[in-house]
Image 1: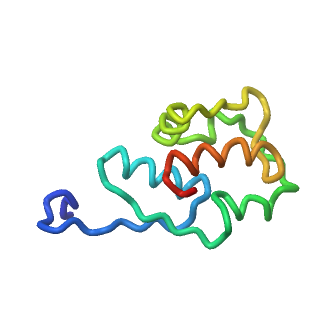
Image 2: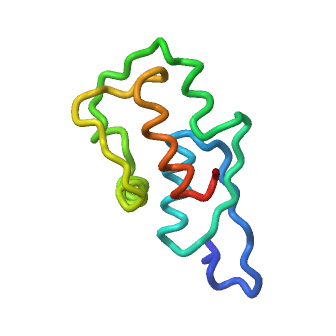
Image 3: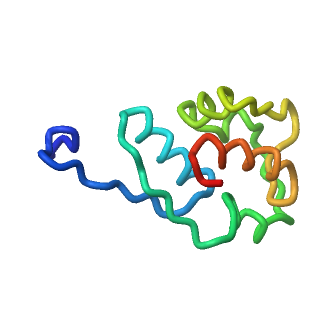
Length: 106
């Protein structure tokens, strides 16, 4: 496998989707000093989450946040919910707005 950093001209890395998984992937790339291009079909970060807003996720936030993304969110001043399980209509705006600033997707 070719190391992207060893290429004479760096290739762009695309991340498809700006939901929790896409932003976690972007955070991991940024951690490696790569600048991803994030593509989201919706109008905002995490737009598809509202489609399943009626679903309650039963695992606590600490199990649903990637460590690299959490570090970026913490640096942006995001306050983690202590007890509220994530859900599409739950604390999504609180979670997503600092992500938009952290990942440059405002």
